[in-house]
Image (cartoon, rainbow, N blue to C red):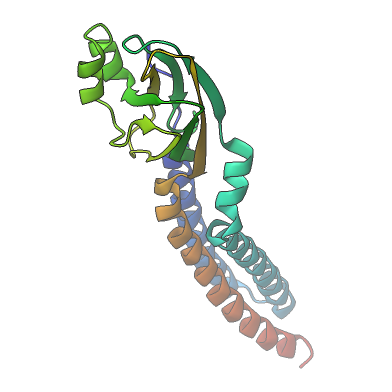
Length: 231
């Protein structure tokens, strides 16, 4: 059974593109509206309103850009969305398992690394759900051949850079090296989705630049219409 996943990244991308198109259309219609207006006072109101609206959008875009590029953002995401757990292994050949997802159900965050610490000698394999279901009955050697982590000996700790894949479930398998009871604690480090970071700031920069240019243009037009009112 596939885990629930609704990628919101594509939806955000679509919404931003549509907002950009609507914004450009609004610029064109505003210019046409001003061209056919005869009242200087009406033109003054329209240009002042357009200037204020553009400045608001520019500020909002700038705030989001600063938030996405802020060094503290990964720490905030990791602090609030990182996962922790522990498993206790007692067998050399039969693993104790735990499961985790490499991203949240909306695709906004993804696992960067997973740190595992043991209180004894342990071997830890991380497998995709597909490989685990295919080879779970084939023994330790076969499962180890399909692990995603190259470093698997927790003595006492290992840090694994998590592979970037589609949203899926992963299995953590722990074995005791000498057959004694050993507990493996694991914690994940998360960050904002790479796909979200890759396209969101450039689109927001386009929003910011477009609205700043439009605000300057409307402000200059507004000054001209103020002179027309009091002429």
